Length: 292
Image (cartoon, rainbow, N blue to C red; front, top):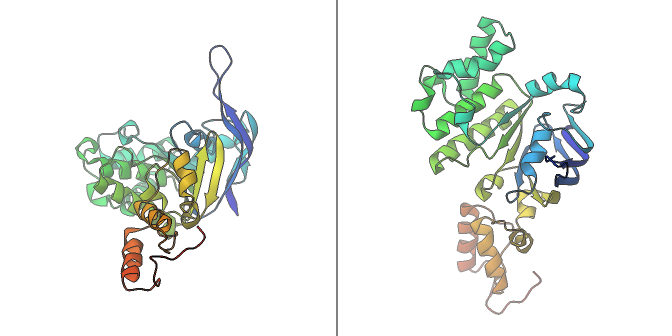
């Protein structure tokens, strides 16, 4: 069942002279409930613009967008959409407004008029899910970047959304912070059943998704499993995108007539293939020719 859907979506940012550039061109895309989808693309390709349509931050100039079965173009639907489709942005400092962690997580709930007892329960549950319960009394400005981003995520999930959209949430974090945030996202997806739509430029994050959508010049270029998408190395590089290092190594070996699989994405998979290669599992590869 699709929980997010864009049908022939087009969007143009207006300018003062009324001649804005069209950013999205006839985009059609659906996201299944409970899935973890990564969106890739270079700056300006339209991925953030697309994401902002799914909870009504932006409205279509052409086509239609649906979230949790409701049109985002109908104003009466927006409050329910915003409650069920939460967004987390790149800089957690722009989202954290309170001086105590638990107060920040409770902020949206207070605005929604959630009863105090229920609010305390939701705050505790949300902080526990992102492994920040022990920091509930801390000052946010004293936290690390990864911890701040997890607090920002907790503030959204306390509202109990069905969908979580994240626009490059790890771009400003160090490797440890990135790992913490990704762990929290996978826990939300697998244990809580929350649909995750992750915009990222990190290939190692994209390979962890169920599905990867690659955008270029306002259109969907590729849409498949990570293993299938990252076999299109030449195409991805032609649109200025990197690929996982393991996939790049397999690609280079294939061009040296070494018959290795192209669907290798992780370091561990790469180590296993190279070990098998050295043990002769792939036969006498030195003069072997095959189709690429």
